Image (cartoon, rainbow, N blue to C red; front, side, top):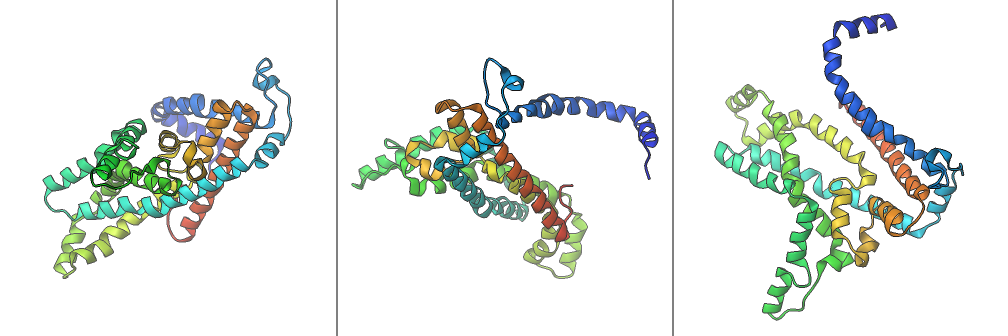
Length: 307
């Protein structure tokens, strides 16, 4: 059993290692944990003249006010639907792409695919949304082509029935290649002698993928899945940046998520900071619960989990 004295002794023994960690710990304390005191706004009626600490406590009144709003539950439903849509349509794709790229034997071709798939990740959602408007907007390339062949114009960006499809498609195009990097790194760590032994035993490429590559990759997939589920209420993937740059009042019914709802409620609708903080805290608590539950399920199924 480790004692407090033993811990201090070890810290003194490895003092240089702890000094290396110190700047990172200071960063988290100052920029992540320090500002957390602001969550008490969820339980206060904020008054600018009195500040956060001087404002009066009002208990759960902010939560009660928010939960009675139809717009909140619409944003909650959209967040759940879009997040689980990302898990179904987006999450498996980088895994498949990584497995396929791994099967390319010519190193030059493999690097070409990696560069082509990874490049869109470095474009901001502002640029990507601009590209989409130029292609899919009222005066975009798509409508010009439809007009040339005598068909009626359509504007997919203001059509609620197509908006979520555009969200998934654009997110895949932008981040699919970036997601494959982690999986390719995990595959690169597999001992090549395993493939050589399997080939000598007569295993084909698909059998090698099934019995060597996938078992080695499964742990990484589970960890990333846990992290993705832990971002469910932030809509994962592009989250706020993607939705905010692509949505408009015409598609609020299908596109407004909790993050964009908090933004509009705080700055555009001129509402109280207390109710906006209550929504943010509600979202964070659910994310934390989902993360813990998914991690426990992963461990129950024989995986290591993230802690």
